[in-house]
Image (cartoon, rainbow, N blue to C red):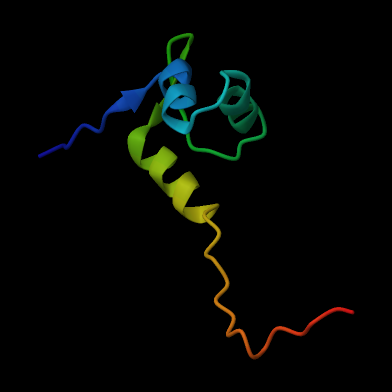
Length: 72
């Protein structure tokens, strides 16, 4: 059984990420995200977008107030 994953257009990825179309196109050009060529069209698997976001998510730093120093 083959599970077909949803493929997104560059415009859909831009809307999902809240960016312009130029950003996902640059990711594709620099080979920083997985993509599929369907004829002359470029599609990005939904899981590739999720993986890209997860990989580039920065976790907040938790610092206790006692550790912080005052600057004069």
